[in-house]
Image (tube, rainbow, N blue to C red):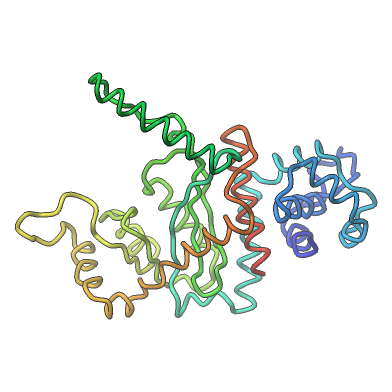
Length: 310
């Protein structure tokens, strides 16, 4: 909580405008939101927890606990793209000053994951899966074409860029939908690239980001050594190499275990480790009811994870 308070104090103003009531500062409210996420509480549960922890409140200069409505409005204001970016800028600056990023020797890894849009039990999930399977079989017998489920279209999705040496998240993209990973390739990589002082490093990604234009963007525009397996697309029947200069290089570079270890691709699993850490420590289900509130919940998980690492 103190780390979150210091972070927001160095990144954000004390109040949103000069006409604020000034009962709480923005750094204090951000610290309360981090406690809420770390303890896996709702807004009402966080209010009750903070009321019982006077010593926590005194550590950040609070005389009383903010109510749940104040915390909800603070989350809507603090967890937008601009302010989250400023908080991540300061976090990466702290890590670079402490020399823990390690991007000169270990690569940057990028991957995405989906979260559950609500809290459901395993039994309920299993029964829903059985029901959907029966409905697909019934539609197949009647000659109907099964469409894509609305739940898949509304899946909360998070893309992150992780420093594999220290498990710190350098940039994040939050959206909705179970589509491909290409749309968030540029924003995630560019935000990570502009935040680190040493901008010549290696970025490793899985085959979901494969494409010649993405190698061009990373290598020519940013000067980053991108490593992506060239497996997207229909393979050639004659065994011809993939199209494109960089994709052919990736085919040669990732051919053996020794070459994958030499280029750093064997460190890509660390980003999957970070996704697992966030879901185990902070929960895999989101409390928001709308797409925007779920995006805020995922960005708060990213900030809370980084503060736990720091």
